[in-house]
Length: 117
Image (cartoon, rainbow, N blue to C red; front, side, top):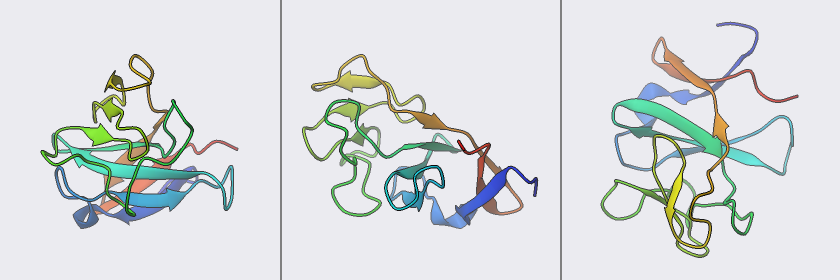
């Protein structure tokens, strides 16, 4: 593991279109959180903050996908995001995007890379 990587979870914790994993961002201890999900076989991660109302997306811890498992949804006002890019395709923040976080998956684990200071 490189110095600029921080363990998020085991790879097996992220199942395609299922529950995601929340994690603290060291840049904002106790305040801002990130989340990771698996979509189209790859791990995607974002700051857990809707660009519309600045609230966390998940309605229950780790519940980021809507019923079909194809889109991420904000529980506050129903904004819909494409999981591979974080781009909002419907709802009050249409055209905005979630803030992406760089992750790497290797050795059966998922790591946050180059976390903001």
